[in-house]
Image (tube, rainbow, N blue to C red; front, side, top):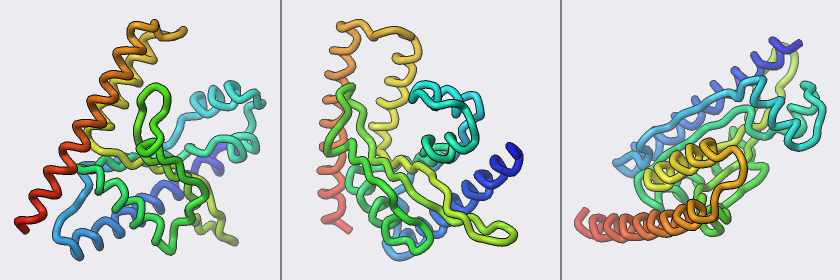
Length: 197
């Protein structure tokens, strides 16, 4: 039962990766450049899924995993400039093979911690022996600067298993503003460069 469940999500991840690679290649052919610095996918481990369910107050079962864990498949797309985030989101939104279920724009509305990224909860088709099943995946699109900050944020939160000290939290919020300002400056630089192309 578990092997079938996990295999289905492995297929789903491959479907998503292939579709994204095709979309991004088509974008590169049309525009003459690729906005993507790198892209990485992963399948959540069973212990991680169980932990997420327990944090939400649900019993660990395959039914609850499929119902309450939206990021069993996770894909992170890291781009160069702020405008590239929205270009990639638009590209995904217009794919006939990906259904957008939910959008979370943490760039326009950063989290309290300062975290910025654009999240899409999507449905991708998996072609099984007798039917097609749509399964959920989460796509995160962010700039290099946002990715750098998110990585540090994750390490800091892991270090403080309890509440993060106020002093550290305040510093993190300040650095998040610095990252946002850097992204704005890089966006401006990109606009200047585009005038010469």
